[in-house]
Amino acid sequence: MSNLKGRVAVVTGGSRDIGRAIAIKLAHLGAKVVVNYFNSEEGANKTVKEILETGGEAVAIKADVSQLNQIEDLKNQTIAAFGKQVDILVNNAGGLFARRTLEQFDEAFFDLVIGVNFKSTVFVSQAFESLMGEGGAIVNISSQAARDGGGGGSTLYASSKGAVTTFTRAMAKELGPKGIRVNAVCPGLIGTKFHDDFTKDEIREKVAASTPLRREGAAEEVADLVAYLVSDEASFINGNNIDINGGLAFS
Image (cartoon, rainbow, N blue to C red; front, side, top):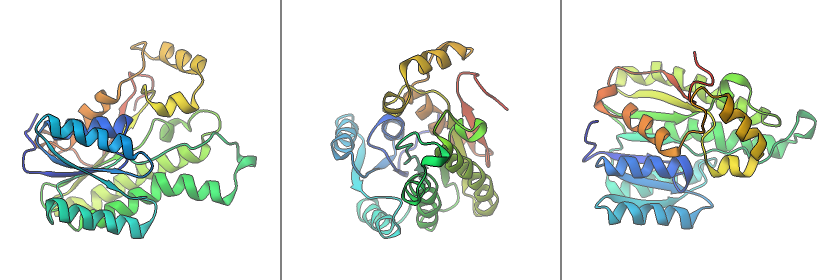
């Protein structure tokens, strides 16, 4: 895989789980990494510390990426840390927050889920696209839920990730002529705090057993795919939403 030395990467929601694994992987390949976080300051600092201890470069920057003024602050702090060129953007920030049925929705819950999962992807991309040039790469983190509607009580989450999937295709067309590639990865059951918090053990066991590989995925496996998509080896891959679910669902 290509050495990413000299490139600057921004990873939203980079303090834990898949985001943390992506930040560490990109740094291992030589990128200077901005680890964005909102609530998980301890996790972000731990991620940066691990990167620094292995000879990499990274900074942790707090920002609620569902808020436009904080996205602008994230952009300004990134420029202050690593300069005015960003080569890689990973829109990873997201969450389920709670499992709720249609009758349990209210406007605040709608705004929270759509804001963190989809609004953030749109406006972080808008902010950082202006710093990207030929060879830039954006990877959005979608979900298997975008394809199958998700599990019980995840209607808004699945719908927001479906929007991310469509946005990825649209941006690939819009930004491709500028030499900026846009792709998404769509994880299935990955062993993370997300499922620790929101998925019952018996459901996880059932889904893993239904997967041809008979197991959950690991955050590091998603990070490996993201690293490939931002590398020079993937220079003609654009507009794809790539499944990573052990064969449970595929195009």
